[in-house]
Length: 517
Image 1 (tube, one colour):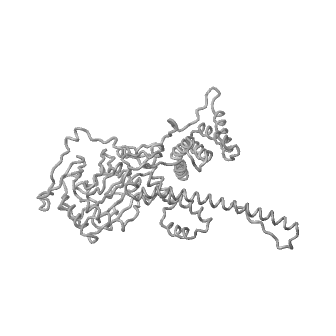
Image 2 (image 1 turned 30 degrees about the horizontal axis):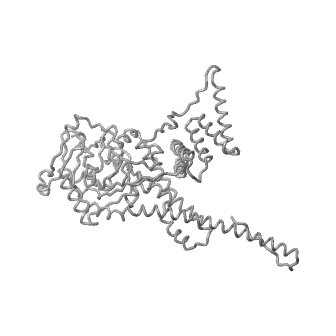
Image 3 (image 1 turned 90 degrees about the vertical axis):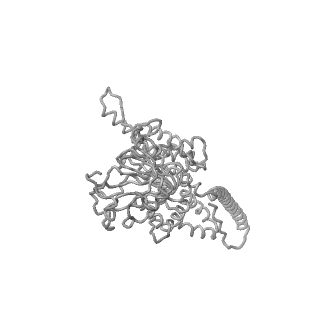
């Protein structure tokens, strides 16, 4: 900040006072020059920022969907709007540019929040885990099927690490702080110091149980900043831990402090609440799919006319078996491009955040469409009736879902189980007997529908639909149909669902002779 101007008292101008005035004026000039220099420095920073943002926005607005299909671009957009524009605002606020500040203040109400930036960072970490991507791959923007190359800076990697740290997620803290340190060591320009990175990294590694490596990094931190109080205190604590352990060991045994399993600085990922996590994520990567040659021989393609449905006799649908048991089929050319665009257009104003995705409002957005909304909704509903032979009169509204950056649905059942008998009580139409899932976009990478119980993975194809029964003919739930929507790695995924219910379909799909028919 520039120096405060010297205040001169209004005294009769004697020689002494005149001399003081000369020096006072000199101070004022120096103060003025310091102010000008600071303003020029600010202006230079603002100009550089504006040029950089112009380059980014020109590229982004030329193809918004393609640009946002790259998850790093999506993360950096959220990060820029929440963090970096705020830093610019603080810089500009020191000037008298009220017009810009007023405009920025108005626009800020529409900007992502701190919570959104955290959600975007967690979405990148979700992709990292599900698709086994190392931080360097993500930092370099090396994603399959992307048109754009977007990289993460040291500051970005540090921000990812801090997000994980603040969430008590030391596994990802280590991964991202290590990447930040690597890029810093490679000479990349950054506002973050090595000492700051090492401070977080050493503590996170200690939390993972690797005391010796934590000590090694703390020593490096102290060599960079000998007066770092926390580092010195941590070092003494680590040394005492090792000393206590040695004293607890028999004299002839060497110390073997329990340490987290590590391979080149990569620690074991902690277990979480989802028992089938490994199977689910492997299927998302296309691994572990239990499609054997014997099973494949039982899968066929055919023309489907809905049991001689008059609407389908002349133009039957192409039906393809995706799985034999439980039986899952895919139908081709169910929705036209024009119908898809219309449904998306109708859905956007009605969008709400999925209750299953509280972390980030950009993960999964859903809408519900009624037949009265547009003729195309009624048309699609009738088409699903003709294909399935079930009635939509007791079905739920057409649900439209848009999976954004890292958007997913973790493994779940569509039907209500015995322990939740009142799940659909308010509808008065019984349980969800079947699911009809329309794919309304192609996805460059990720976004499969997977069934962990029997090892199936079904990949989105625009205009196609998949169909399966959630209940046996007896009304008992088919627990094999537990399924998930994998995170979207690259691209944007649009789907629409129609859930058919039991009431009204008693004679269209009558009971079988056994409980599991």
